[in-house]
Length: 182
Image 1 (cartoon, helix red, strand yellow):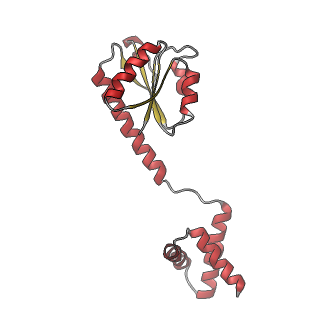
Image 2 (cartoon, rainbow, N blue to C red):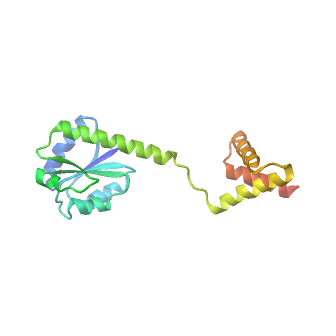
Image 3 (tube, rainbow, N blue to C red):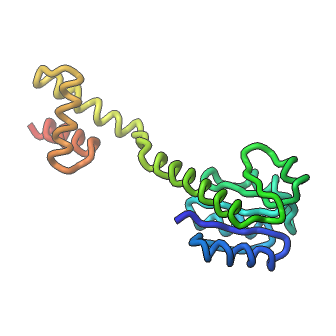
């Protein structure tokens, strides 16, 4: 579940919003009045949404937005004048807050964060130069010994990797070790 942190100058206002959101099924991790506290809370969560007022005890919302991690989005709550001046990339809701507007905005932002988290998880991790070197050496060994093309050698390593339940780098290391034992 995507966490929500509320930061408003008046803690009482934050608690009212928290109660509304909790009744609607959102997970609110913290209600605070300073940007420093928000950043401290964010260090413990992978992704989240910060609902922020215009001016906090220790900084403005723009300063806080600059410090937010990439998987954290901000919703600014402010007067129509403040919202009109809001920078790009920050969602905004005017006061007085309509519960349906707040809930719909948070649901939309949660859906976007879920998609980004999924995309981040499925992104191929880069192999180190050392790991890639193992694979390349194993491919060349297979190409020389078994007269395979580079693509066939790579497919052979993949198949062995899948059959043995090991990753490709470990399979390449095994092929190289077997060669040195001969």
